[in-house]
Length: 266
Image (cartoon, rainbow, N blue to C red; front, side, top):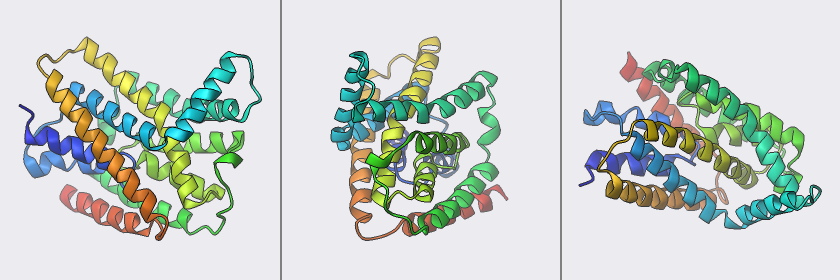
């Protein structure tokens, strides 16, 4: 039977994966608040699958363009708008994949998981999101996405490898800084999340093959479902909120969370 701990992890991972509030900042609190250990690799993979399905379903029209772009590339058509969008997302993903693999093979992830680091990054990059969101350029849309934008946001995304930064939060910050509107910044961030989640999920799956955990098949299916529903709901709420408000509520929440983590570390 699936434990309450794994249900909690699935909900938190699903809700916070795409909100600019840092999923790692929340997950690091779970052992402290519940006296539970880390979830298994199987659950990591299942949560990745659930959140990936959510972003694919919610942004299905954009995903269809990416698939059409991949088809165009396979047919030698490199100049279509869909092919260019696909190539730009590949470019935007290269930096984080390279640095992520270096961290993975050096096995130094544990160095970034302290309360001090997660609390500090949650707080600092929450303020960064606030500053970038206050930029008054709001004229760029996804159709304006260029190679320069892709490379800059790819470099921004590297920062998300430090727990507490928030992958969606830092990409949204960069997109706002470049002049994308709030909703378009989220669209860009979510599309960039697809190859990144696939890469992260693949690494977890490789580890799972090397260190299999039997008896979690049905638990994994439930985790996929919970993460999917949670992430889909979070995306819908955020996109609806951004019609009326800025990212300030998320910034305030990050400041509270970061301050809490720093307080606990002391």
